[in-house]
Length: 497
Image (spheres, rainbow, N blue to C red):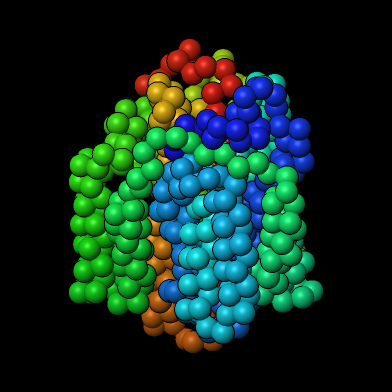
């Protein structure tokens, strides 16, 4: 995360005067892993619960994407600031505040009586997650200083990040089907309580030295700009693309993002040092990450609704039916790690984009009674493989040629681009979906069969636009990324999630 990883004088752990490793570092790793699991779970567990939450709270199709985007916007927009706060305010203190805040926000969401209350709770979860996630990662860095041990610790962290989504799909299905969708949020409370109880005595405090000024204006402006863009996309679904409100919010979002660039150029302590993204290879990697996130996040949302609304799967069945994507990711991630030293990052990224686009185009062939085994299963496995082949080299490319003092910001920026891309993509694809459903129903008899056919048509349109975004990501990689395989050191990767 942003800033150095040195500990304060006398702090227990890697930075002690004796240089000895912290004696309880492996127990502390278990506590940190629980927090990471909670943050990762929260994305997929809510996806499975969303159809029932939408029906229970009366959320419209145009607005339902806020359950996802309120979280990802706050998380992605505040992630870099959260990393700096953790470094200078104290990583343990930030970790504990993030954990408490995440639990309280989860309670608010679980008790929500309206869509707006749920959206607000999700935004608070994202904000506290932006404190929690970088603090947890920074704690690992200071707890494990020996190379072999650090590799093992990051492997555990990465496995949680990768496997947590699958656990979320299953747990979300179980809780929604056998308890209530609200427990998909309320379950965070006991998990956080256990983690806090162990973290207080076991996790050491550490902080970085130096100037502790924060780029709060930059964080506020970039988050406001992204929210304005997403709201503009949402208004397009309700009022049309040429409506005054639609154009106004989109224009305001663009202006605010331009203002963010100006702020970063003039700030002595920028949230995002622009030198990080102006490098051709890293800039291309970040842009590709944003576009792929935009194409894929929406796909996961629409698959959930297709399984539960059209195919009438129960929540647990929908969770199980979504697991092939995770299987594909695990297969490709292992293969990509082996292939990257031989072929380099660029061929894997382009190949991953092609696989993901093919999968999305395959999903445009769904119907009201599509077979899971013959179409949905292979399409999801291929989609997961495309994701794995893309993001493993992306995580390495993010650190190529980055000075040590910018390494945290570079890795955090990559994670932020995924979240921000997912936010914008989910809103945009949901708008295309609602517009396609409305257009399909024009001139057709309003009966249950037609309604279901209209939903399927909307899903097809969303998948097609998702494929287009992923193809664009592949073209960006082809044009901008020029890194050679020998330019990426072995093991140069950042934990994803």
